[in-house]
Image 1 (cartoon, helix red, strand yellow):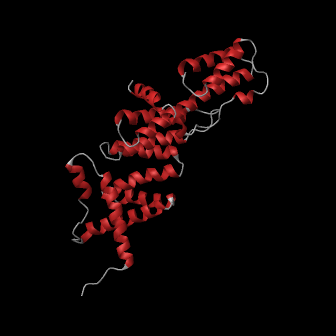
Image 2: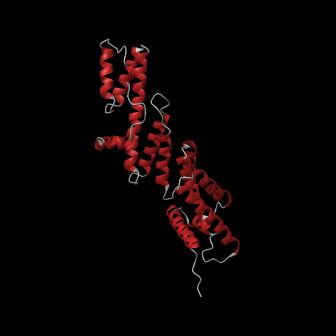
Image 3: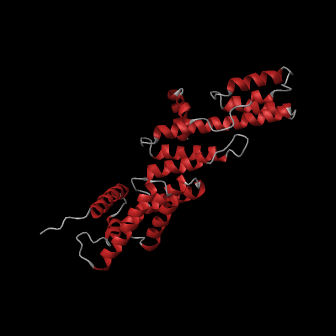
Length: 279
């Protein structure tokens, strides 16, 4: 008589199947040799022995890691994924573990660590199908570490470079539209940073420096949302009537613009971005 599997066993098998399907979508590595090597420790037909035991151990770890990841227990997931990398680096689960380690660090808001892990994945698996996603996430790590316009704008600057690299490499990826809108939001952030510096010069009565900064903004970013306000301030300075009080009302928003709002004027701005990334 056939013994029916327990509910727990059936659930485990369903989760295993799900995660292995996810794994297969990542396994588009060039060369038969590397693919062969990754699956050499997988005892498909349950032949027994040490290889099957090794696979089962990695299988259990990936299930536990993915279960923790799905409910936001990223630190617990990191332990499972890291153990796979350390103990079973040539198992089929190791590839998925590498990618999910980076995702865990990203959702833990450890953007510098996540970026390094994404870059490491890209360097080790340059032809993997997940690379467009990985490149997009590298851009998101830069984008997410931007803070306020009165602080270091390097996050926004790096995000523009990272998203532009994605658009050059994979212009038709599923991430193209969002990458372009985030580039526009990052550009607005940088313009607002420059304009904030101009207002600071006005506040400290360094009017010539303010004029030069405003001229720079108007020349390089003529379509930015802050331009009307920048022109008004420039006119006040040119007339020898700089604002003496209430300078706060001249300031732009201090944080990164909502990237969804950057969809205004998509057509022409998309062309500008295409020209920029093609240079």
